[in-house]
Image 1 (cartoon, rainbow, N blue to C red):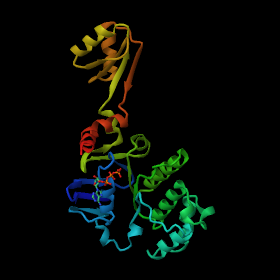
Image 2 (image 1 turned 30 degrees about the vertical axis):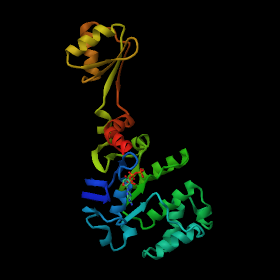
Image 3 (image 1 turned 135 degrees about the vertical axis):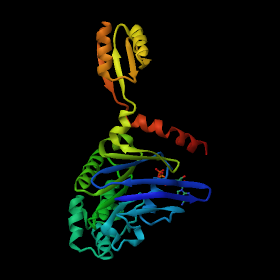
Image 4 (image 1 turned 90 degrees about the vertical axis):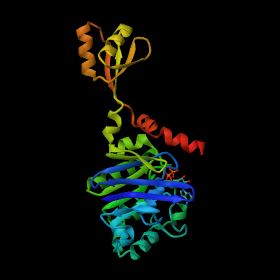
Length: 299
Ligand SMILES: Nc1ncnc2c1ncn2[C@@H]1O[C@H](COP(=O)(O)OP(=O)(O)OP(=O)(O)O)[C@@H](O)[C@H]1O
């Protein structure tokens, strides 16, 4: 479990992270979302003890990072900037990490296999493609078989096969009962990967909840009927909100699809289409972060 309590980081005039309090639970993938500059990386760096908070605390399974006896065995991470010596082979890189963290040498071969790098383990990491570099970063994160994992934008720049691989891996790690925090600005990706979302903007918590909560809020009902104008008036009299669409089309909010259908039946209105529409995660995210993005652009 990762627990943040009033976590705050100030860089001069910039409040990069502003009083963040939330919990990342085990057994789930938690997506950490926010527009560029929202403070995701800074938050992850503080959890990992790489940046000191101005105030507040971040703990991993109840302890601050500096209190962890074998950090790599308690939390694995991959931040955007990869610290790999370019002339060192993937195998040597992982072996060095293992030996400095009291992890058995044999585990290196295991994680290389897990991420599909066994065949290129002897090659210099400097010559790796982006996708291979990400796999090596993940191998390092998994080296200590940690119960907690944090990945900063792991799918950035990957091809579809790489994206699918990360998605499957991350879901598998959570299914094993691990705590998994994944940052991203790709809402569509999080919709497929995450169970829960924490959304931040301007360093502040904007929303937190199960993935379904983010799409249900904007639920609407699409209606196609030749009596659109009169049915719209009837719907509004019943308390729904109606937006006209194309010819014969209505978008109804504030009423469920079965209730719209029942009202049409009572009124004798022919329906050619009646379909619940969930707001996409992308739309909900844009709506939630509009203010912080505008603020960001005005700076
Ligand atoms: N070392 C630093 N010195 C000064 N300002 C910083 C420093 N690190 C981050 N910031 C600022 O803090 C804010 C949050 O940055 P951060 O990198 O954490 O955001 P992010 O959500 O990870 O964004 P991105 O998706 O663009 O990486 C930004 O305004 C950034 O410019």
